[in-house]
Image (cartoon, rainbow, N blue to C red; front, side, top):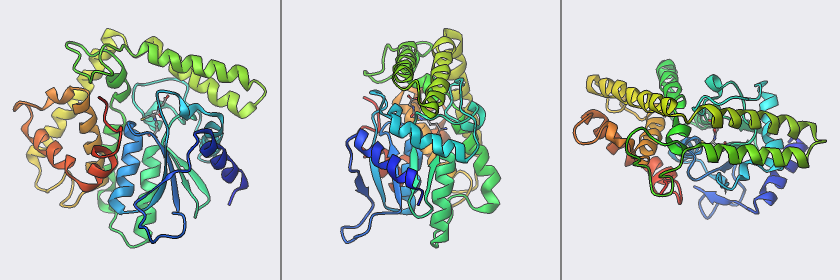
Length: 327
Ligand SMILES: N[C@@H](CCC(=O)N[C@@H](CS)C(=O)NCC(=O)O)C(=O)O
């Protein structure tokens, strides 16, 4: 095991004052689980990882980070993620597209969650899509059915890309066109103040750790990314565009479901694409954007959303996870 991973994980636990909670481990489990996850209750990226772990019934040590108080920016956590970003050779992302995708967003973000530690492999894995695939591979090696079976992998990956590129950050933080149907805690917010609070947090850390080359690189990129978000993402035109993008994804999903001959989106068994859609549709509904399918507008999406919500993995990772939904 890489000694610096051990030290950085210990520092991160200490920084958030968390010993972690064992999820999915039976009381007879004596050893610590293979996986340790830093996630946030209400982060869609984190929910995807928790759902895959839940579906496979894999135990893990879970630490909750608060996105709004900026715990993901804590130096130990940023250092841990910088290690992982370097390992995959991804450049640091320094502009915001509105989506959470590493692929189209331009690279790795050192100050976000989820962050997975795989103690058996001795690695830190970042980016929800890579983490979900990693967990699935481990489960399959242990005899489980894959959530991304090879024959369906291109179709599943295409769905994950659609979902990863949806403008969740804008729909959570920015003012929607028309009536603001977001939950009370988000209603009226325009996104700019939230993004600027992240910019200012990076500035404070940059001043405090000016001599630390790794942290300076991490916070500099994040500073640029959130500044671009504050300046560009939340204008009326961009918000209209964001809602149009989200609605057209639902329109495509409606067509797919209308034409479907399988019980779930791509197969008779649940795949990773279903878990991702479950989380996406729950988030849209949470933001009041279930107007895209409610009241008979897109009945196949409505029926699919209702079934997805009942999946035990979704119930565990989102519906019953404290703080997962905004209110
Ligand atoms: N591509 C990354 C994106 C991660 C991401 O954007 N996480 C968000 C929550 S979904 C976050 O931690 N945001 C905190 C911040 O930017 O301040 C992934 O999918 O894991």
